[in-house]
Image: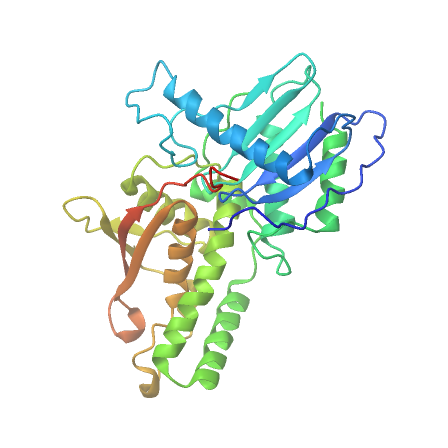
Length: 169
Length: 186
């Protein structure tokens, strides 16, 4: 199991937002909490350093998932609060919205979590997140130069992702 | 936008990129041949094929999940069905059948009548202990490990040794739920 400390990822330099760039930032985590990818397009406010920011994000999602499935009124069986569930099992939350942003999450059964933070008026992003998962498969998983579980450094992935996000509805 | 329903094996197979079957078979044959020359010991070759399969499996699972849209399987029975019908079809172009469930549903057999890896292959007398398709057992083991299932996979029947089909015994050892990876005091 990899613990997170000591990672040398530095956030990629902010891409000057092209007109119509819809998203603020994206995170990709794996099942062990390692942040495989982080990219920001439009993030004026940054309160924490990079490691803390990633840990906070991962921790938040872990807790939210646990919370949402325990509070599920239609769920049949409930484990104890805090008992981890298998990814994809039980009720899974997929987005939350505040007055300034919307955070959308997709988690695959293999534990890959893709988080996209966008402006609040955007419609449901589940299909888009699936498309980004496919991009991850094409450019990271199938890449022989990439070791699974390490940060993704692939120019093609970055460009394709930027292009896709720019065109999000 | 409602989530898309999982696609059947045939639908996915029609959509993925395919390579020429003979190219695939002959490339695999060349790999095994080279391993035998390099390692000489048949047991070593079996282990190496399993390890290679494992490394493939841990990546293959993401491609499988992304392209086939299956959601988390409810139990091991469903998992075995999905592997046999969708997984094998998507990556090898053939379907397997699931048989011989044991009493508590943790162990089953995947039977392959048709296996593209072994076209044109004959085992010589010097390689009688070789599990030619051992890469498949590694792939399944690796893929299932990435979805939190620890399994043990063994070959029961092998057509290259004279049996009538290929049969893999898949045994679920345990489900490993993910743990919160950060220590609380950090």
